[in-house]
Length: 296
Image (tube, rainbow, N blue to C red):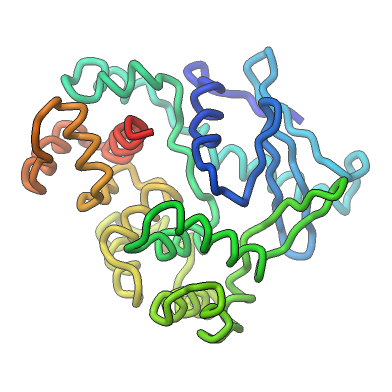
């Protein structure tokens, strides 16, 4: 199966971004190919994503026979997932026109032209990752994520290698805080994750409702949930729900990236950041993503 890529897509920059997450447990990169475990209901698959010389993604499914009705649904889901994961529907031409003429954004855009805002298509996973990373360093966040996934997630095993999928909200909603404490989650963080899972299972939190809401309303709904502050809400709005104006404005990494790009001695204030981002109306999320990329 093939997925056509936008003309300005640069496979190397996107692969380099994925490779930079050294502790990631939800995909594997080998020899320039990406391997991703996917779960759809009771069906699971591992998809190999490679770059085709005709500027396409080539999707190959491991450990499965040729297309049959049983696997058709998850194959179709895999195509949708990859398109969403790499944000292939977004036309970046207006962003590049704006950025290349901007005194700040031209730096990351010239360096990483063709990079997409690689997201987290699953809402529950996106929120959990935002919560897991709160107030700890990235290395330990990846450690907690791996423990969480390998304890409560599902996997497909092919040639003695396991390809993991993130735990379902149904599974996590059934847990107790004591199930997470041995993994070194704080009691409060465990409560947050279980609480979000219960919201998902009850239907009071859903991707469909959030995506059909105005940005301000979606942000308000997310921050009304215990454990989700402004940073986590905007991270989810940016990386999962694709609201173009979402900015985790208090993010330290964003502040450091702006300091570097502006070549100044001190980080800009929140008010200065708001003024800077006002020039990038409609592309705030992409501006943030490209600035973050300067840090590693």
